[in-house]
Image (cartoon, rainbow, N blue to C red; front, top):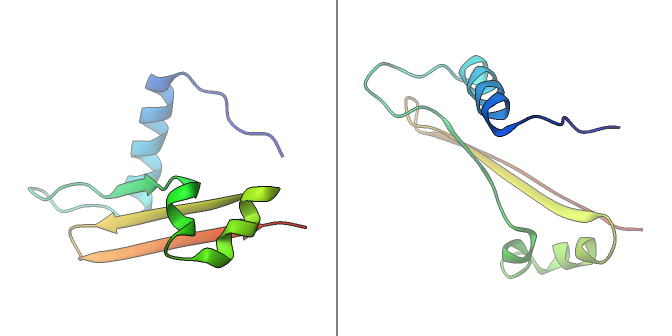
Length: 80
């Protein structure tokens, strides 16, 4: 699997297009926000994830949709 290689401006446009399709926002409200959390910050609240830091990684993203008040989270760790 290969990641996208985009300049910052193209990445920002792509982010906007994807987030709008995932969760369109109402006029006057803040747009949806996607945050990527630093791996080390996750191991304190969830120590089981620390094993993922040794090999393949720990990953976490949250998506907040102000128009609906919903918060989604995706968290994963991988090790051998």
